[in-house]
Image (tube, rainbow over all chains, first blue to last red; front, side, top):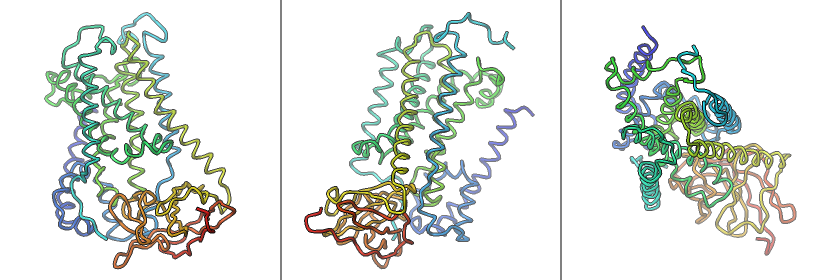
Length: 120
Length: 349
């Protein structure tokens, strides 16, 4: 099996499980854990893509809420990891720009074009 | 307190916001496609399909850049706050623009390849991961698209409440990964083949603007937080307070506190609503109750409690007066703890 075939298989498995989670969660689970959702049905269609994409997170939170494992106080407390996220993004962007410009055959430095396949 | 979910909470300002955004997208596409093809460096003849793909791709990049600039700009200047409130709609539209870019690419480059699956063809097309020149830049695009899809798909109010604000916020840090991946996608992709450098300069300018704004605001807030050392920290002058409204202050702990002036007395509560982290400090006091501007949840500013029969609670803060400066204790009281309001001297506010 090639890597692309493996990735596609993974995608299909992920989507299949996600579909099952969508059906169970939207038909039954959501009414158990969120009073704001009771009697509201149209908005549930908007949740389908999200559940398909992050269904493990959905199951984890559903389990947390059912078992009341999160302290009330922690629910509102905002995240403070903004700084590291910004620094990581900035460093990645600067590195990618430097690497990308250095690999160009035109400006900032003009080099004789080389057939990429010949470099290998 | 319960507010039933609806698909989209429209109001007049959101209609206006979205209309301006849509007009901006159409204007950008029109300029890119018809008015300035020379600027974007189409030296060699290209098909309409490729031209369209590049237009939508460039538009998605500009949109994500603007989205990321809104946060720091709103922190630097309150006039950008209206752009912040409807940023989710901006993000969702960006995803649709990005998906249009992807569909043009798949339909043009991969439809007639040997495998029936266009995605498999895309993944097979270039596997030169060991070299920088000719690196499969599509991979960066796929990473960015997955991140953007997750962000858009979890933008409904339900997700914020369901995942809780800390988890939701961490999930939405994916915006930074998406942007870095998008920069990689562009710089190792289209920019490798640009002889006209206008697009290169515009692209780099935008990317570095995003980086600079984030770093400047982050460093500024960090310096402010460091300067406010100790258990008590000054947050406002008495003259800066306005009857019935709040002043929002950032504490060294990273929390935001809303300091309200009501009938000559000052109270402090957490700025984050217990419902979905809405900015309470932007609400108004009516009969000692502040109303969250997002969904109308109410709290007594003296106790941090919702009026009966509702049970929501938020932390309160202790205050003291030093001259005409109001100081707040950085440790929050447990949610719902009553605190005697600080009475200001005559003519102080």
